[in-house]
Length: 231
Length: 292
Image 1 (tube, rainbow over the protein chains, first blue to last red):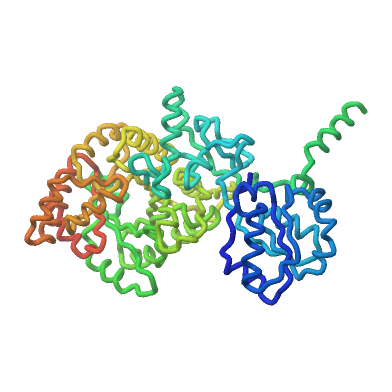
Image 2: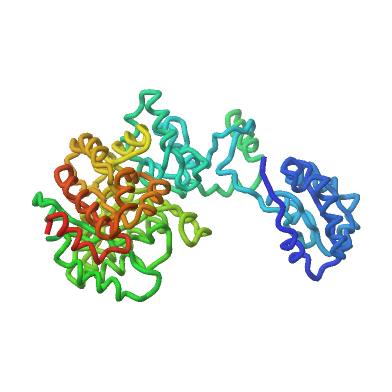
């Protein structure tokens, strides 16, 4: 899930300067859960914009705004209204805003900021996070990722700034390297602390172009390899 | 004596540090160079200390070289990627700077440019390793350098910890830093000599010189502030009392620092005096500690 928060209303009004007819688009997926772009927030935004003298031509909350096919089918009945509007205000994460902008030939304004969650998480979300770094270090760090658990993302060990096992950057959070040290100690693998991790290839974090091109790349790869196998 | 030679000779080494100011006015550094010349073996120049933007350590170190001192170029991993770090190391070498002290660096949010992007492309251990490769004549990509560096590389360690885990972790970090090429250590400020002794009993096995950190107290309030906010600093209550009761706080603060140095002399290979605004008083501290 992507977490978002609404931008300050003044900032949104600034985007809409010189425009009158606004279509508001929300998302009944993550933005609904974040309480930033579900139907209640869309209606609230409608009221606030009307109080500022704007004309809200129409609104919708699509589930999910990141799904182009859904966006197309759900917005088709409102196509004329959208085309008569000056612009769209999208209350959603950055993905939804981009999807809307790709689907509708109208200026699209982002109404939310997408919040960084410190790495991607599993479908059932806990504290563990993955940076998708392309060069996993978990073998050496007791199964706790130093890139996501340490505020500085240090690979070889603690910076020495912790007080009472709390991080110098965010004192409400435990020192990641003390966690790693404790885990290695507990599992009898403290020798790992002595292993030097050489400079990281950040280049491996850059996604390959085929990974950016289509959301179903994995299926396509699978099909190709199957074809190759039978041929 | 220069720092490396002092430590090699077995002399009890004295280093101190200066923090460049925000701006282009270098009169203070020039004045401190005059005062400290001949009194210390090495003089650290902090690198954007506390993540507050100032004149660079490289430029200030270069001025100190010109004035005949042996600066220790502090380098944090916070602000520069590996290209900039290596390039600055080459520049430092060309300016005649011989010592580098590697630190992670306080996070940008603790300083005066809280929106800055933190870098940490290399961590401390990786930077120490990189400098040693440059000393061997190669950059990180494996390219040969036309003219190699010859740095004496130091690192930092926190000898006194609030948890056992942190204490053990610091020793492991020290060992790792040595394994990648750290040749000397400067420590966080020490006030608890017994706790420092406990650390040195463990650290002695590494046979690498340790310069114990000393920060002269200016007031009881400063001591309490550091106890609360500075990781690894533990000023004992009796010292805070002495400072609170002192008629002449400067005299008492300097005397406590001198006494600490006398106590640390048999436990370490040198001291690193971080005067934090009292740089001009460093020669007095050295005299009071009977090191002059």
